[in-house]
Length: 170
Image (cartoon, rainbow, N blue to C red; front, side, top):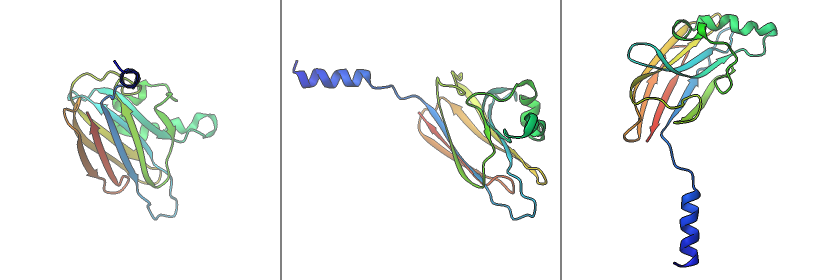
């Protein structure tokens, strides 16, 4: 074999294998009210029996004195009942600060936390938002895992969430 071909084969062998993934864009709308507060948001995967397969993201006020921000997590009622009340926050790689209005991107790769080794099957990606002096909203996107082909879904919230786009990467 020629040296350049050996080198190229060695580089291919050293390259990382591409894994399935989920990419999510979440729009937090700008709401024109006197006392605007950023929403708490939870993103998780749920099995058909409503059990939680993976908590992907939880945005809350992490800087409140004496961890008082955790007190309001229960306002994301669906997530709280399914999983939140059993968790100890903060959770490395899952919890983070609330986000300002705008579009926010999340990306998760199979085999890496928090997605981990998700079993093949049908799931619902759940996105729940709750805002102090505001409302609560839950959006749901059905997905099949692992994706056989690239796919894209989009749902639109009515008040606390804007457009949520979900891309599945095989």
